[in-house]
Length: 217
Length: 162
Image (tube, rainbow over all chains, first blue to last red; front, top):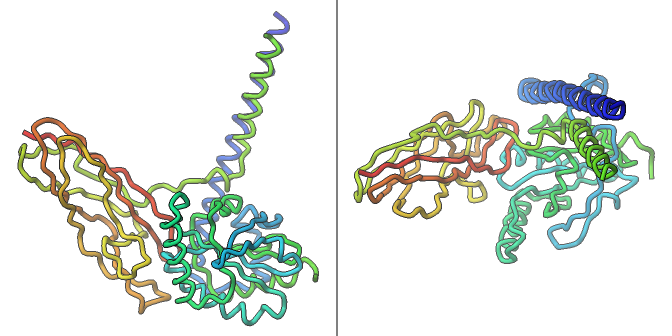
């Protein structure tokens, strides 16, 4: 009888813990959604924020910010494997995009210019294509890959374009908005991110932030 | 046996607590649909003769989806996918013409899109009886800042042929 009471107590305590965790999680989610919406409306309505402002505004649109960037190995358009870990010591911009994403086509030319401008300081940009791929059908896969290659050529992308055939976006929070861009500092930590079309000045500020922190190689 | 019971209880509780503590970012895996099928839910058509069913859809405010004929080849066209149904033949689907749209930052690149409510005309021929016209509307949505991966919105119409 006494033992049953203890078991019941433990079960009730655990259930209470689960309910508490669920409520806390729900509130956090609501807050994050409100912040995300606020962020998107800010992007649409206001000019760029200075880098220092982005750092000090006390609002973090992405829970990965401040954490080590999840590593990945993906193939580039020539089939060569490229790992994020290869770029330790450099600042890396990981830009998730797709051929069917119109706002991405606005940001990509900016990234190309910024690649030219900041590569000598140690910047590396990786464009990760989120186009749907038919991995079960080689012929279809080749065709879809060609569409990505054609678009990359048309946009004159001057940095590696990687094919996300391994759902690399999942550890990055299951990227659903395109473009979504992560700014990674020289020691591999995510120092900023942007969701959706972001003003050029804000991208520049985030690049400077990534270049300026995490120590030199 | 009692040890096994304990192990099951502890494992179930651990899984429950872990799931509840999942990061909000991870928990938010699926966005709601950007397009909703509105009506009809049920329609009566003449048996054995071609009939046109008007399928009404709504795109969420602030969003747009590519029309059936996007102006750029890489854009994903809206289409209706309906599997073969015994006794119900879908011969043709008419899509409305898209309206012209351009992003403020790219005014020269015109897009052909659907916004708000739009109607597809499905040409069907059904044998006498009750049939379920079930399908998926494949679409790819964007707002002014972001685009979202292609999704499928379910469509279901109860077709009564008399």
